[in-house]
Amino acid sequence: MKNATKTIIGLNVIIVVILILAGYGGYRFRLLNGEYEVLVKEKQALQQALDLANNNLATTTNAWQEEKKRNDDLANDVAGIANTVQQLDKLSKTDRELLKKYSQIYFLNENYVPANLATITPEYLYNEKQPQQILAGVWPKLERLLKDSTGTGLDLQINSAYRSFGTQASMKSNYKINYGSGANKFSADQGYSEHQMGTTVDFGTESIKGDFSKFDKTPESTWLIANAYKYGFIMSYPKGNSFYQYEPWHWRFVGVELATYLHDNNKTFYGTPQRTLDTYLIKIFD
Image 1 (cartoon, helix red, strand yellow):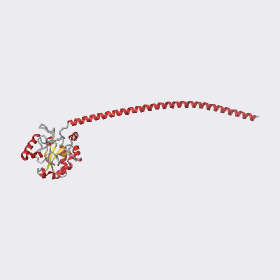
Image 2 (cartoon, helix red, strand yellow; image 1 turned 120 degrees about the vertical axis):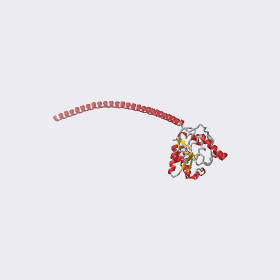
Image 3 (spheres, rainbow, N blue to C red; image 1 turned 135 degrees about the vertical axis):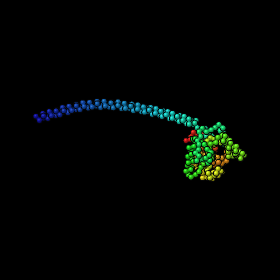
Image 4 (tube, helix red, strand yellow; image 1 turned 45 degrees about the vertical axis):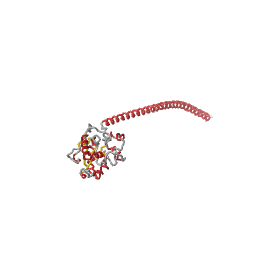
């Protein structure tokens, strides 16, 4: 009997403990569940805040990118305008006559004189006692051509360069006395000569002794045909031209870019439209 009583008491104790534990567990569950729900709500609130922040960031980023693009476009426009102004300023300071087709087409009056002439070094002249001048902007290119050709063992010389309106008139008058109307085949009237612009030279070499008819048989002539364009020079009157007789000694400076274009495309200066030539004027001394 005593044992049964102890057993019953023990079971009651266990039941009480279980009930206490169950109650406590239920309490803890409700407590944790409440905390969980709070955390879920906080998470949702944070997610909403994050989504809003991301949307704001995306909107701000898009706005920044659009503003940056507008600023970049404006900067490009300003740079383009500045470049255009610089180009126009450069063009305004460049003699517009330099790429015109003279020789019976365009005319230079007696008042036209190149803005700035440089004296050709006497060592490169056929006759050192007759000073020759060339447009100042052309001289560095011509000097380099002469030095480079000399470096290959050649003997290029300058027979004639800049000639004024009056000098050309006097020369043409003398030619007419000696050759009559035949002078028109190889000599321009005053105002139509490329020499008056100060961009043209007549080359020679000691071996021909001033006889230009022999120049195209010289190694100097061969070198010019192969290399002169690299320095901005072109032969004005090649074989087959309709202006003057073939003049392999007569070379005109038109700028490296135009000379290269004509050389690479097997074109002639006088056979190229004037509007095409004019597009190269701004780069003539580059």
